[in-house]
Amino acid sequence: MSRGKKGSATPRFKIGDKVRVKCGVMDPNFPDMPLGGWTGTVTEIIVQKGQINCVFKLDDRTLASLHTVYRGRCERDGLDWETMGLGEDEIEIDDGTQVAIEQPTEVKTQPLSMDGQDDRIRAVFGLTHDDPLPQVSSETLMTYCEYLTANLKFPFFSSHWAKTGAFTSKKVSVPISKLEAPVEEEFDEECGLFGIGSGQDDEIEIPLESIELKKKDPNYRLISDYTYWSHNWR
Image: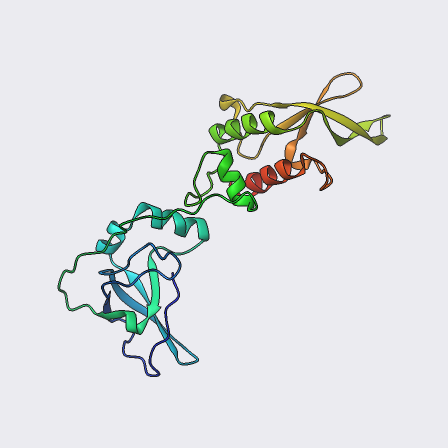
């Protein structure tokens, strides 16, 4: 849902009105997305400091016309693409006349910014700034594993509690020399990638999400980005 512009002091519409977006109105959040011809039913009137916004639920015809990039941006930014909110001066009563729904003539996708965590993760998967981040799956984990294997500086060290007796253990530093690639047949969405470390007598599997590195470590950003994605897109 987008934010509208400043309107008059007295609402001209009421809840339940069928409305249509005027020709030439652009989405305040996405200036390359025209809204002209969109129709729906008013569900809320918001009056604040002389500004009147109308929230309306889009009808089936409008929803079917939404550009895929628009839907993707809404998913990316956590916006509800089934509703719209505009200033009352940008809409009019829908009298039933079918008006052409405007479509973007030029979609302007912002370049990826490596200063942004989401964009750094998009780069892992070859996505654009308009694309939502993918869910964790055996396929996306494999892609991330290949990316980290190519970009992490090995070995790096992680802490591990090693048993020293029947009821005792101590914290030891374990060198991580490689990552374990996910196996599709054994995929479990609760499990992510593992680093393989060398113990005293055998190899040790350490979940990548549990590895804590100092911010100055060259691997810190790579591990932190992966952990953020793995936690939030399962």
